[in-house]
Structures are given as structure tokens and as C-alpha cells.
Image 1 (tube, rainbow over the protein chains, first blue to last red):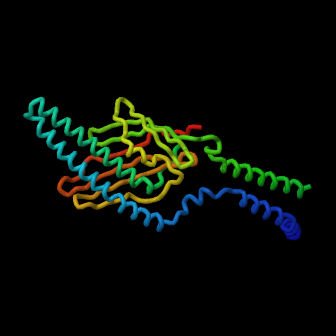
Image 2 (cartoon, rainbow over the protein chains, first blue to last red; image 1 turned 120 degrees about the vertical axis):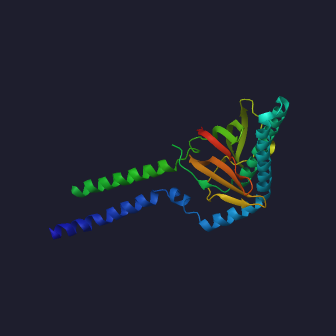
Image 3 (cartoon, each protein chain N blue to C red; image 1 turned 135 degrees about the horizontal axis):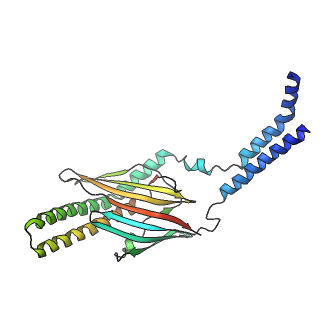
Length: 122
Length: 148
């Protein structure tokens, strides 16, 4: 039995090892490469980008604060305001929301080169 | 005889492995994918706008075009440079930018679509001590599809 096992080992070891090596050689490694990005490089790049997008962040937060003030103005106008006053407040609120949209888009555009992976689309 | 059978089995396994590897290497681009389409949705408070998105693969990268849906405003020229599609996923946590008036936090996620990565969602939130938390600004790409 022991002799038979040894014979098998001698006969099959070569082809088996060769087959495994050949299989490994032709298997793509793109999936592995995709997740081996050095985290330190990404962190440094994110910091650089964040600094570069500072003006966009300032513009966004200014627009955001203006929107909150327009919203409060709209709410204060509703109880006793005339139709014209309410319409004016609503128009200012829409304009403030559009300004946030524009500033937000610019900020996202600036920061987009640095993003995290999400779920796979089925 | 057993030797021949086992050799044949090993050769078959190797052949299957090679074919599978070749199949994985064939990206949608090689199969003819040349664009990504979808719907871009902007949301903030009372603002809600939708655009038809088409991103063409070009020699220089990706070129986006947005068409308003439902009578929305056409996006300004400066806004079209947003990277809706990119060749890699990138990496990073939410990006926090402190300003004198408050803190702006942006979270961007991309997800794989064929050989590329498509913007899944971008969300910008603000924390201002005097005003507290308010609505988030979000940009999302809905129903992304590869066009061959």
C-alpha cells in the first residue's frame, strides 16, 4: 500500500504541480489589484483636495445659511402675511435653494476625484 | 490507463481555468460599451431637479451631457465637469472641511459598472453651531446602464 502510494506520488506530482502553476499563471489579478491601493497615498490626496476645495466649501456654507434664513423668513411670513409677501418669500426661498444647488454641485465636482467604493450594481 | 485518464482530467481543468480567465479579462469596453446613461437627481429642501445623463467614453476620458427632465433649468457650463464616471473607484472617507462659519461634510460613493465606476451618491451636510443641522444636498445617479 505504501509502495503504491509512493508510486502515485512520483507519477502525478509533476503534472499536478504543472497544472496548478499553469492555472495560477492564467488567472487574472485585477480584482486583487483594485483593492491594494496604498491608503497613505489616498489620505494625502484627500487632504490636498480638501484644501483645494476650501473656497467651494465656504461658498456652499454661505448659500446654505442664506437658505436657512430664507426658510425662516418664509415661515414667519405665512401666519399674517399678505399674498404678495408670501409669494415673495417663497420666491426668495426657491432662489436660495437654487443657490445651494449650484454651490453644492461645485463642491461635489471639486471633491469627486476622491471617493469611496460603493456596492456593486447587480 | 489510469495515468492517461488523470492527465486528461488535469488538462481539462487547466483548459477550463484558462477559458474562465480569458472571459474575465473581456471587459464591456472590449465588447463595445462606449457610454453610460442614467438619471441624475439633485435634492435640497424644496429643490428637486432631474436630468437625463449620458457619459461618452472619449480618448481624453469621459464627456458628460445633461438634459433637464420636466422643464428643469439647463445646467451651467461650469457644472458639467462633475465626474459621473471614472475608471477607478478611488478611496476615502467622508471629507470634512471646517470653515469659520461651520463644518461642511461631503460623502461621495462610486460603484462599479462594468469596467468603470459610476457616481452612486454625493451628499453634502452642514453643521453650524447657531443653526444646528439642516437639509442635505444630494446628487444621485439613478438607474445607470452601459450602452454598447
